[in-house]
Length: 107
Image 1 (tube, rainbow, N blue to C red):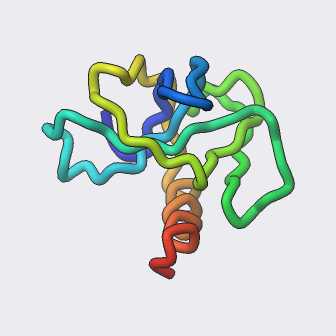
Image 2: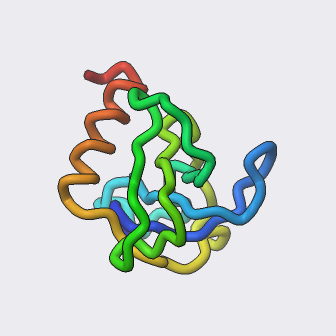
C-alpha cells in the first residue's frame, strides 16, 4: 500500500460504512501498524477547498465520480484496510497535497 492508492475501508463511528479511501500517509512509514487515509464519497458537494472531485476511471477503480473528503482524515490499523482498487495520478495527488496543506493550516 502506497500514498495515492485508493483502498476500501470501514471507518469506525459516523462514517463507518464500506467506502473507498485515499492513502495520504508518506511511503516512509509503510512498516507502521496504522495507515492514514482520507475517506471518499460519491455524494458530491460544491466545496472545492476541502472536497477534491475525482472522475471514475479504470486506473482509480472508482465506480462513479467521487470526492476525496480532506476534512475526513482517519488513521486506521493496517488490518482494517481492505484491498487496493486503484490509484490517483501524480497531478491529482499534487492537488490533494495542496488542499491537505490548506485544510491543516500548513499552506
